[in-house]
Length: 143
Image (cartoon, rainbow, N blue to C red; front, side, top):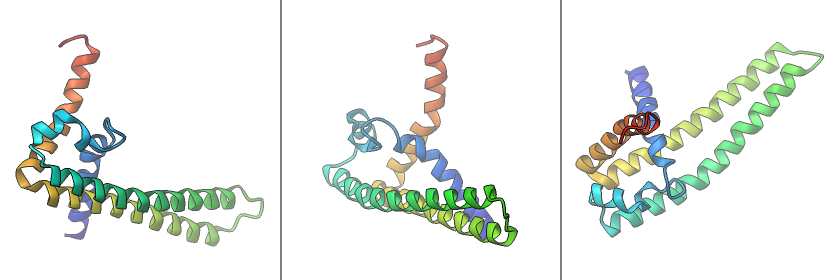
């Protein structure tokens, strides 16, 4: 069950990552055509802004932590006096930092789901699913 939930979380994060990185600096709910399509209220937009702000600050800190752990691991791996135990411990710290970052992303997704409600969230997921098809059509010269 735990593996299933982790897999589901990863899939949902991937599904919404591109939508969240869309126009408006990651604030897809600021794009008028999406606001209209999802029928977002001003209150929902405000709540999304606040959630984004909280999450973004946390993610900046967590990304820095991941980068620092990566740097430390690289340093250990490149060291002339390689210490396998130290490298494994540093790798565990790196994976813990990556997990914390993933959890923060998923918390934001949960908050988006709560703010949007079932129908608008399903529509958002449909927009995400349709996006690769629109991009492919645009590359081939089709309308």
